[in-house]
Image (cartoon, rainbow, N blue to C red; front, top):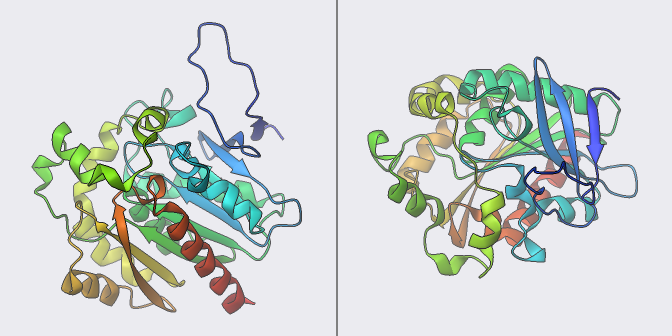
Length: 302
């Protein structure tokens, strides 16, 4: 298909180009047409008809490779999800990956939700969604997923699993862009990650586009409008060492209270994890819990 192309991990690169980041066995690179934007991503498929399509959306300043961590075999959501029978696609959000050159300033939160919704519809056209579509989103992408579900919900949207996203920042917004602050907020204690993480992460980290960064401060206001319109099951995960967002009991209860239309809401705490859960030792536990929630959503939708 012209709008959905694939390349294996062994594909050669153009002379003089930077080598492609490594991927796990069975994972391939794809591009998806999302309205006017071409998005890149990673895909891993089960050998049989998929139980569901899991669409994973990375946070700010990373890429789709966040869900295929190379520091340890246990980190990859893509390979784990495929082994459990799901088709898993991790997309580079607009302004990242293949669209970075086309959109050097990136896209706003509202624009991204529409783009990702178009990409999900395109991915679903070949029928490989099994029982439906399940969104798994981290950090900034959690906002995108909530907005997508509220305003652009695809057919057979099963539910949302969102990690590292609250409604109130734990630090003043004008301090967020400080490089030293970002490192601390993103990672937490370094012992939470496999030793090779920060060498492998060089292929996952990407500049946060300006328009995305500028729209980040809108979320506290926008969340009050968006969250009450999300109608599918929602699972929220907060890491023990989450530093971007306020997540004490009162703050989490306030966020849950805004999800008035969600069929049900679950909150999970992840011990021994920093903000970047999917790159740490807690990744496998988190991914298994998220996929278990997807299974629950499948059962409830049957």
